[in-house]
Length: 157
Length: 315
Image (cartoon, rainbow over all chains, first blue to last red; front, side, top):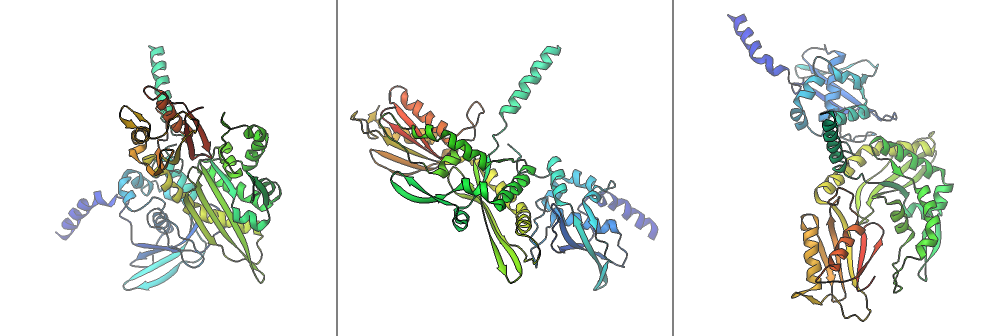
């Protein structure tokens, strides 16, 4: 009976799980200054019940953060505005982002993880797993402009 | 059938082309403060008054840092779809036209004062001027750059976007590298502020100033002259109301001899889809006044891009 109820629950929730907005819990913050043109360095933290977080999850969180959250200025970092404008853009361009963060994993083209060991911080009953991610922000911006998700500076001219 | 299809396609493409807005032209110039600090100033005779003005020609020909800054900004702006106008080429163009410029005056001998900056703006027809300056801060062995970039609307001289800041100090990096870093680090912020200005342009039109004057030629015509029961100043006011975007303009001051309009929002395009400028806008008013029952001759003079003077009474 228990299995049957769980099965029903899975069937009920399945359609919603495909939305890009159903991101796991994460934080992005300044990852330090980077001199490489067109790139931005963030520190990405993904919350997990155990310490098991995959590189793809960290990359997905880093790109998602760059698109919809941005990073505040701190220390040697300049502020970084969300590339897609705000979280509203995610629902406005639901089809694009479902595909972007979906099975094709298009986001992987715009991020690399630093080869440093992951950091682990225990927060209440969960773990924060963090690392440095380098976002190819110019390439991401240009592709979003091409896809019509954001307006380019020359749009309309 | 094939011909019909091709014709339809041609019409569609033409309509598409004409509906495309004219892309604003952008030019980078060193700020007056920077020119002064670096000693790139020259004494100019402005109608008998000696004044110190920036020597842009010397600056672009001799300052390597400036050349690098212009190139870097040019590359980044081109990457965003805005190739820049070249200041050096513009100055050369002005020199060639200098002799011709001196002859621009009305038949009555009226002239309009125009500074070198106004000339550069008019010849380059840049809609936006990126005014840049920087200071190298030296603290012991460490060097840092304080960088300031302003976008000025060439029509109104108003600041439309700006970024400034001091980069991280470095013991080893050369000034040119620190400058490049400062430019790159500030570009996203700058572009997003510029975007806000472009959005406003599309919605509310371009802001310019229009001045109306009357030639004192003994014809008896002034702005209080009446046509069909309305004074000429009212007729001009009505025309401005009808021809500005969302009827936006502000009448600063006026007497029987002059009217000054500011914050005049002119459309970006003419009815045929071609780009509108201040001169064309005021020329349309001139044409309107030439018609019956007014039958008034007038002369249009421009100053820079954002100001035009209509002198009523003669050509």
